[in-house]
Image (cartoon, rainbow, N blue to C red):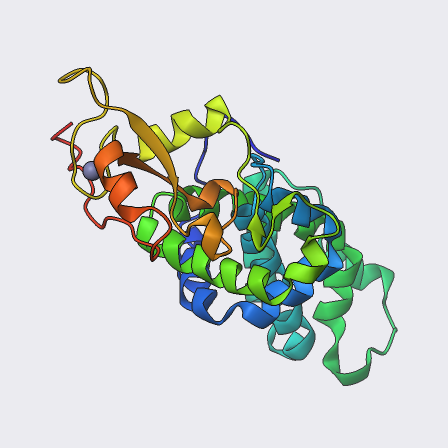
Amino acid sequence: MIENSKEFMLFNVYDYAAMVEQCVDNSQTFLEVWLLDEPSIAISLYRPTRLGILNRYIYAMISTWLRREYRKNSDCYEFEEIEGVERCFEVYGVKFIDYSTFLEKCNGVDFPGCERFYEWFLLNEEAFNSYWEKIADEVFHIMFANRGFLIRFSESLAEFVEDNFSVFIKTIKTDSNSIARYPQVPSWLKKGVFFRDGGRCVLCRVDLSGLHATDRTLHYDHIVPLARYGTNDPSNYQLLCKKCNLKKSASNPVTGSHYNAWWDY
Ligand SMILES: [Zn+2]
């Protein structure tokens, strides 16, 4: 669920952000499995949605990784770690069946291969899903602010789109060999990108807020051009001035690595 404001609950959300950041260049196989399993998400390649592909990707990556980890290393989870997980649920207000109650209920049940923790996880799967959704939303908040990450994510996604173009051509609007441009960038997306990029062209840093000059046109540019299998997902937009956008056109994906200092707006 997307909320209007963020209340950051856990410091380890940065660990998840680092995990997503480290894996993004090798995401091809992962994206493939995930997107092909969920054709509805493919629609988001054409139509920008608030709960976009990056947000869903983060959720899928965290949940897939943790599911595998819990299944493989169930016997490594002692009371201390389980209490830690329970505390996370409490912090986020997620309802769950606590481990003590679970143990009482399954008194005498012999779990093969020390899979006690994994059984508890399966019993609480809904709670875990809800918890991961909240974590994914916080991680998205961090990652969307980092264009260096966004260009790598958009390039991985573009590679996947190119490899599977024949699949998408059946479900979404396309122009010959690329995803079609969405007719109008929604106002919520314009506002978000404008705020993130500080109202400046991300390449030449010229002010586009209209406060210092009124003759400059804002361009909401696709970081990875559509002609190069870029998408209309919110993660693929940035603010450019007209001059930089015309120079960039459909050439290589490029973004800026400078950010306004908080005290220099
Ligand atoms: Zn510029």
